[in-house]
Image (cartoon, rainbow, N blue to C red):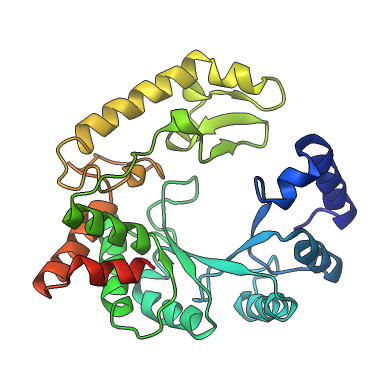
Length: 304
């Protein structure tokens, strides 16, 4: 969003040249931007509307953490820019980071997005350089789990709820378990969902973030074939296979859950017997449906 719009337009032309206009038109590829939406110029709005960008807006609703360079809260301005997207008909979703400032206020934050009809993803805080004890946004795994369970309890009672990830994935896992249906497990050999690129071009698997001994290549030096054929890449697959066998193999939701929660973010400290956060929330959802005698057909309606 800080890049000049003509630069972005040149990227669009390169895409048409390399990928083919037909492939782009039929949706084989798409462009997505994750932004705090603090600043957006009219020409960028024109581009997003014309090229049908997918927009994700990071806005926690609770002020005091996402500040401008001058120390001012940014939320009011972001909401104004959301309205600009809505007026243009540019579709967007939202992301809330579930952290120390949002855990106690997750219900109010959800209600705001429900009011404007915008689906959201609740992203549990994960390990990062600034996520240290004493940080204003720090939250424990227990606090995050409790907040997600409270959000589900609130969400399930709403008449006109909006989509919330990862709750929709967790509900799907419970539904499939009830029906005895399995889904394909997350497998990086079928395609990577994300790599981290450091400012010097070093590439990392998400679970190995910034561990230089586990870097899988450098985007400025190595080809994609070099990265996928590197010893460190092969070692990362081996580690994840062992992680799956240790934590997913004995889990009662194996097969019904796609196992992705085990690999979506790095976390410090000892690993629990099951995956962080997701397992306890899925158990909570499963117990709710069973204790309230929800039939699979009714749960399926939630997923639709």
